[in-house]
Image (cartoon, rainbow, N blue to C red):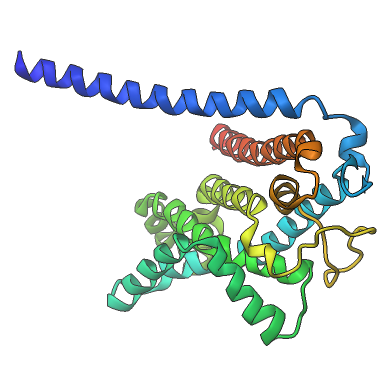
Length: 281
């Protein structure tokens, strides 16, 4: 009887905690949708800001966020996947390898502002690249790299060892086994991890604050060495730094809703990719 009571109490506690989280999330979404949907329109998504950002749209910020996320993908995904393949398939299981893995996991928990300062010191000042799309993309790539490595290594680890041994027994080399057997089996987990890491990068403000984002630009970035606008920083300006915060508050809600929808779209892409690969497997 006592054991049954404890089990029931534990289950009820978990349900209550989950309900509280969902309730708070629903409240936030209700507020964002209710306030932000009033300004959503084609002009809001496709126009430039006007009159001190009190009118117009957020197209430069949407374009800049998309561009810098793509730049970070080009650097983070190949490096992260290659590093995970080496650690999981080639590196010996010794103290040094365990130390590297622990360091990667610790880097995943470093505050994003630290990456922003590191990007400023290394890319902007040290390498002389200046504040630009490229330096912000490189900084975001460093931010997402630990997550990409960890999720990719976990996806490779989930591939059964018998699959590897079967390919090797048929005469395949180590790399042929990885390329033709292991990686195709791990693709759903790898792509899911990459997309989720990039969805986090798309919503970060601190790493791009010192490395390339601008308060306002009259033109879209035409090269990787131009400054750019981004949704997170645009939202920060409208919410805290604007000279007429009350006047632009609806625009801030609209920007927050668009950013939330962008992150939600990236997360949905991850789930769709995983589901599609599972069906085809």
